[in-house]
Structure formats: structure tokens, C-alpha cells
Image (cartoon, rainbow, N blue to C red; front, side, top):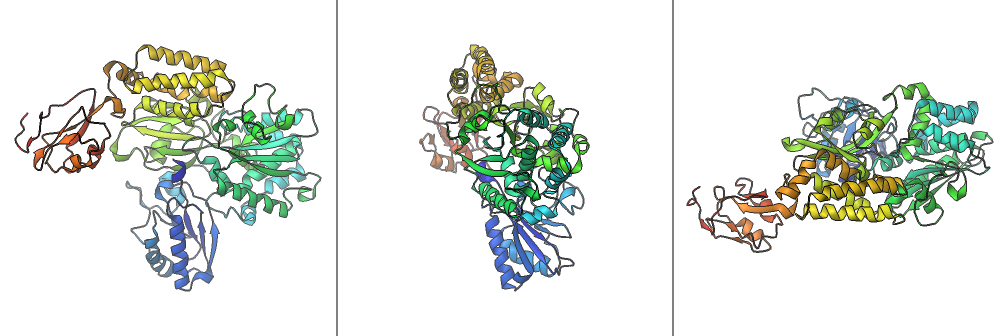
Length: 632
């Protein structure tokens, strides 16, 4: 999902039998889905009916069902209203909150016959999810520490400080099998142990919240919806590794996340849960926020640490690893947002509980931003080991408009695509890696039959190559050269030798790049070449794009058996390449056509007279003729 289309929700809680003594409205601060307008309309309507004194207004993060939002939920009946607009508010208040009746046109209905859907967990989008990291998102006010505490917040920290040694904490995290959720999948407890054992009196705990993948919003959602879970995990880590200070590195493009972190830190300090002598103990720990400038390379741990220090964000060779020499050359533990957010639940429920979820080598849950050509886009948290088919079809609701599934890109711009033959692969760190994809930080983009895999690979490579810090030659030059080759192919100038060139460049980048970003940049291209080499060859040998997407191979024609001579296409053509008068079959001059696609876009669907073809042509009149006078 694109950055600007992230959505929030409206949530109405409390009340019985249509006459609640107290209602609770929870909302997010987002604007993209019209939630602000819904919120303002609801507040105004309640004031108009003199009901505003009975209502407490709070904030809550989206529950992830982005396709259906803005959402209104009525508790305890569990009525779920979807895609609510400001104009719907008066009838919603009148019918449901005053008279206790359901507004059927707004009520959530599963597209297929699923039966009654009384509440979240019984909706197919949620039925196969297991929420651990996202357990509080959408249920609490993220700027109210007391709501986090009511749901068990900071109990893990209290348990750690009062009854566990640092070795006990590290052992518990190790036994849980938690692996880093930032993409690499390294065992979290083992990293903590390395930091704890490193010599030195000064150590640091750092959280990587520099989420930069296109369409990714997992870390942001956790911070915006449940910031205290991240803080609690970091404080516990500080206790375990012997650190007194920590940093949260969050990109400046996340102003709401940063504000919520600031509020959460201030509240935790006020409650004695952060700062000096936490919970009356000798343990002291302070947290700071460092705003990143949006460089993708700063997602790499050594570049991130350099940025915190005020230096240019560039990776450095490893070893030494940050656990030995990190921030300001001191031992440093660095984990992702989701990794820290899991820790309090592991401490409270035990390592065996967490290890009982997932697969043998990938424990717990995984969070994905499910986007692309899928009916139910949104944020999902599922047990490790669930199949791609279950995520895409059972949770995601399948492919829109009856189109065929083609591939799914996992791991963001450094990941890889998997075709339909691998839909039943279990989703975990090792299974995806064996097939040429990666778990990554949690991006999952679904594409259908209309997607050109060569162009898709070029799209991801364009992003990754532009984000190179330029420090090492394999990444800096390799990305550019590979992009040049792909550009030639999609522009119709490719050669078969280019496929071998791509493989050679990829091998050099994978073995020679300084950091994981350079090493993984060829991933999307190599996965596409591995599973869709026939499309690459079609572009090179047959000079066509099977998906009808690459403009260099396309031609637009007006079908003489469909054209009604309305002239809409001619008026929309910026190149004046379409000729024909009223009630005349129109003709496109291929020498003038700039392949903008306007004619196809504006042609009325009841006619569908304009078509596009790739590497071929259709028989059409040489010049306009009256409608009805064209014969095959």
C-alpha cells in the first residue's frame, strides 16, 4: 500500500440494548480515508442530540482492514459498519445509538455466503490471524498509558525487575526462538547475549524504526497504535544487556509515530517506568528519539548507527558487529520495532508459549502489509507457517475482477517473487529463502495476470539502485548497470546475451557488496528471471509484452466491428492521431500514436471499441468508413 493511502478507523464502544449509559469513540488521526470528516460529523451529531456528555472521545489505531475503512464498531453487540462517510452519521446515530436498530446498508457483509459475522475475530480477514505484536492496536488509546497498563502493560517489566536476573531474561528470549523481525531473522536472544557479554561499562539499546520499503507500514502501525509495547521491550532489553540508555531511530516522514513516542516516553517517565530507579530499583534507563532523513540505506544497522552519531549514513564492514562495537564504539543491541514489541508477551506468557506458535525454526507470528491486486488490503499478523494461499485467498479475499493470480512479491524491494506453483509454501524465514524470496520486514505485494514481471523487476531495481549510498563499487555500479540492461529489454532493444549479463552482475553484487542492501538488490530481478524467464525472452525475441504493459511493444487500434463513431477517442487523443467523423469507423495513425492509452481509457465500456495489442496487429480500414460498411 502506498504511503499516502494508509487508512485509520472510527470505533464506537459500550452500550446495551440501544440505550448505552456510556459510549466510547476511538479514532485515529489519519486523513486519507475520510476518518476526520466522519469523526467531526459524529461529534457534531452527538452535540446536536445533547448526547456528548455521555461520550468519552479517545484515539485508536486501525485494526488493519484497510479496504473496509473508515470503520464504526458498536459494542457489545459487535455490529461492524464499514466504509462509513460523514453523510451516514445522522442515520447511524438515529438508528443504532438511539433506537437500537442496525443500518443494514452499512453493516459488514462477507462477499460470499459466510453466515452471520458478529465481530472481528469471526470475519474471514481476521479469522486466521493471531495478534501478538498488534494485540493492542485499535483497542487502546495509544496516548493513554493507563489503557496499556489495564491490558497487562509493564507487567513484564515489573516481573523482570523484581524476580529475574539479566541472565534469566536473556535465556527466556533465547528459548522462545524469537528471530529478528527486521528481515535478517537472526536469533534475538543470541544477539542480546553477545551484547551482554561484550566488555564495557557503557552499552546502548537501539530500535530500528526506519521503515523505508515502498508500501510498508508495519512498524509505523505498531508505534502509532501501541508505542508502550516497544518502550517496554527496549527497557527489558536494557536491563538484560546492561545498558542505561537507548535510541529509537524513526524516519521524519512519520510525524504521528514520533509524536506518540514522545508522549509515551513522557508518560512512562512520569509513572516511574522509565528514567532513574525504575519501579524503585537500582536500574536506570533513558530513551531518546532520533529522526532519520529518509535514506533507505539507514535501515542497515551500521549505517543507522552512523546516522545517530551525526555522520553520513553509510555501512561499514563487519566484523566487528554492533554487539561488540556499535554506537560510539560501545557494545550496542539493535532490533526492529516488532522484535521489541514481542518481548513483553514472551516474558509474561513464557518462552514455551511463544515457541509453540509457528514452525520448528520460525517461531511466533509474522506481520505483513498485504497490498496490490488483492480484494482485502491491509495489515495482517499470522502464525509462522501459514501458506501464501491462505494469506492471499482466505485473508486477502483473492484477486479482484476475476483475474488470475500471477505472483506475490515478499520482502519488499529487496525480496523476490513467487509464482502460483508455490502458493502452498509455508511462510517462514527458511522456506521463502529456499525459493529465492525473503521474509524481509513484512511487505507482501500481490500481482495478477496483467502485470509484466520484467517491468515489476525493473520497478524494484530502480528504487534500490537509487537508494545506494555509493560507498562500495559492486552496489553503486552493479545496480546501475543491471538497471540499464532491464531498461533496454522493456524498451525493445534487449538481446539474449543480456540475460547472462544480468546473472553475472547479480553474482558480483551478491558476493562483493559491503552491506546486505547491495547483496539483496538483485533479488527481485533474479527471482523474476528464475520463474518468468519466458517473459524476458518474449520481450527480447518476440518483441512483445505478454502482459500488455510495456509501452514500447504496444499498439492501439479501433476495432471496426465495435466502433460506433462517437468520436470520444479522437477528442481525447493529444497527438491528433485518430481520424473519423460522426458515425464513421475511426482509425488510429500508428505513425502519430504516442501510446498514451487515452483512447482506451475513454472509450465507453458499452462499446469497448479500442483495444491494445503487443507484437501483433489487427485488420482495420486504411481510412475512416461509415459504421456498418466494414466487412471482415
